[in-house]
Every structure is written in structure tokens, then in C-alpha cells.
Image: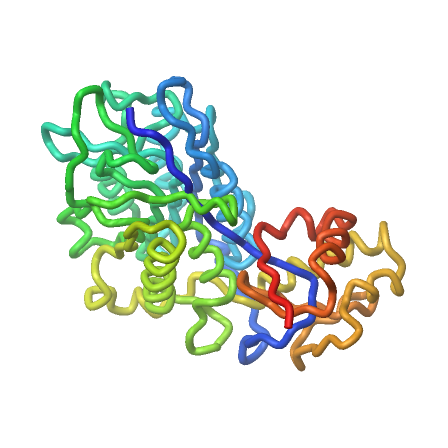
Length: 371
């Protein structure tokens, strides 16, 4: 049995005022006819299957982002984690969507957990909570998933896979006695069908955990990209043609520089075959900011006075012209994960974070750089 490996994802939201790039103009984005199935399996029923450390956390973060920035109604998002992601649950995904999806709908499917290859056929499988790589009948093949999704009337379908299928450790497991292998994640339907797949790694690579952010590496970069950083044209929206280059560059760079391995995300079909699908917005930046402001304002009303809230900001803070002002007067801006120069010491920042449940809940990873 292959050992488990680390994966990482960081959605870094900090209540700080620092100069960062902002969207060109406030935007509101809603997808009232969209549906999403988000799956994360960390702890499998069979104890011999390695734990996927952050898969549930990954799925929960993606589901929240699809709601707040993707504009998808919460009732349209089906979140399946651990024991709620059995083989029957995964096989029912197509039926659940088919009963709801309309021609104008967009569909999103996210999976974080183990994948496994069939050594005899090369078929790639998702491993449900109650599945085992030695028994293919209890697994769920990618080809079955793609077939079910392509049968839907929806025109826009995006699948995101933070898993790997080579059997080379990481988020991949093998049947007993089998060796790691190289396989293709493609399905002929992807070339002409409606499904676009964003996979964490090629068929021969490992999908890694990223310990610093306590997320999968692919999901960490995915959340950062959708959250803010992939908006290359600064129009306030993130599209597939913006997101994939961002994923490819930053996942690959982090894997080499910090994990000393290669991991290259794959998009199927390729960029040249995306057509108009590449320009369709996936999320809006302003949506996410509004959601955070509402939550933080609610917290401040119940816990902190206006002076206490303003004290969270450095005295020499420079606020963006488009920064959002809460009802209590505190100014806020979304800060992507990275290295920042701050007036406060690391100890002071960590103390403030620990004393504020809202910030502590949303901050997954911070690096500190001092002048």
C-alpha cells in the first residue's frame, strides 16, 4: 500500500489594509440555475487505505467559494464528505443532477480524495469512502462520471480533480501487488463533449498535500486563483482561460521549489479546444468580498466596539480606493496568500488572530516578512 503524502490549499483571508490589486469595478455575479457536487474523502472505511489529510477541508472550502463567489444557491450545492461519499453516493451524482439541471444551467463537480488505476485495463477510478482498490466493482470510474455529465442538458460543465491515478503514492492507491503506472485521464467524449476537466497532475505524477496551508497543493492554488489572483485582465471575474495558466504555473512552481517534485495540472480538452467555454466567468471577485464583509460586520456587532475593530488595522495602513467599509467603519480588503511586510510583530499578529474567531476561521496560511 502506497504511503500517504501531503497536499495543500490555502484560502488566505486577512483583515488587513495593504496595497494590492483590486477589481476594475464592483461586480455582482449570480448563477441561480447552477448546481455543484463537491466531494472530499479524508478518512476511508478501510483502515489500510491511507488518510488523505486535508480532503474534507478542501471540499468544504471549495463549496463555500462556489456559494459566495460563484453565486450558486447553497441549496444547489451537494457536499459529500467521508461516510457521506459512499460508492452509491458517487454513482447517484448523475441522477441527482439530471433531476435538476436545465439547458441554461452550469454544473461544477469537485473531488478530493484517492484515485486508483486498474492495472489490467488502465481505467482510472475514484475511490469512494467504502471502496477498496482490490475490488473495482466498488469503485467509480472517471469514464462513468464523464458519461453521466455529458448526458446532462447543461452546456457548461467543469470537473476539478484533486487526486491522482498513477498509484505512485500521494492521493493515489493501488491494488495489492500492482505497480505504479502511467495512464491517460482523457475520455474521447472530452474532445467534443461539454465537460472541461481540471486535474491536479498528469497521469504519471503525484497529487501532493501542501502542509503549510493544510490543503492539497492543487486546491490551495485553485482557491487562491478563483479567490482573486487569477483575474489576469482585472475585470472582476475569473474564467477558465485565466484560471488554467495560473494553476499550471503556480502548482508547478510550488511543487518543485517547496516539495522537490514535479506536479503539473492538466486541462482537458486543451486550451485551443475550449472555444467560448474559456471566456465564461466561473466566479466574481466582488462577491467574495461582500460575503466576508457581511460575516465580519455581524461578528463586530456582537463582539467588538468600533475603536476595537479599527485597532486591528496598522496605524500606517494604506487602504485601496475601492476598499470596502463595514457598517462599523472598519475598512477591509482581501489579501491573497503570500509574503507581506507589516508594522506589527509576528507575535502581535498571531495574538490578534487567535482573539478573533472570524479571522482565525478564515486564515489558513500566513508568511511574515519584516523590513
